[in-house]
Image 1: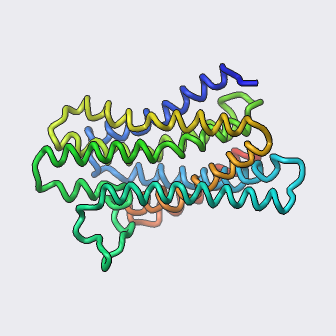
Image 2 (image 1 turned 60 degrees about the horizontal axis):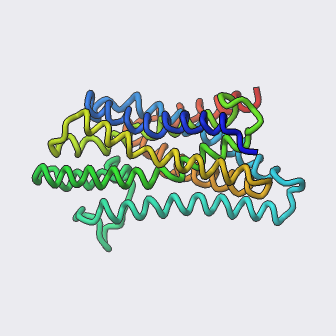
Image 3 (image 1 turned 180 degrees about the vertical axis):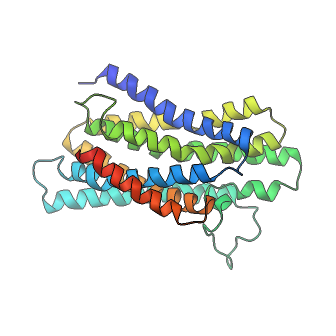
Length: 287
């Protein structure tokens, strides 16, 4: 039976993580630009560690144990779901790159796409290409970024919904769902920064730029509702939902959070904060 009160809380919490996280990134970009990045780097590293613990020690075991027996077919289903989640988020990022990098001259057949630059990683190298151009081209680059981030936030919302579905009988503020919402909210901060900077540089007022940036996180809510609904269909749905969420988050950890953190502050501290995050996740899950 659908718990309308819990769904209401999930929508609110996901809105804070998705809309609030990207919106906060917009505010940070307005106030500080990207010069003050060490704190964000440490927050992302810590979030990556906590997320890795939750995925490997909570979500994946929950997906395997969702049905009565962890038969080989069940394990294959979970592994397939993890691969699907990882692959879909990877393909979304590839699709975003195709639409945001198509005018960046150094990316061609002889110079493949890399993640050795923060602008490339969060898709804002499109902005760098337009910096010497007109304000209208900067504005268009910002709109493209907003649409790209909106598309990207859909599977991340499914992670939150699936996590809440795995603890549907528990209090809404406890368990992995709330934790995932906080982590994804932190992850959305640099993405919000990447959206708002070209909008402001293109002539849009700071208030409107922050509002549009925040709205790019709205699809996170739709993803959360989809993930929660699939997870409550039964043991098979829960297993699929959790395994897909795990794969998506593994891509976010290793393909986005840690590279972003290291590129924002090239030191040993991001790796150490990731270890602290892993240990914190263990304490949260088992304490």
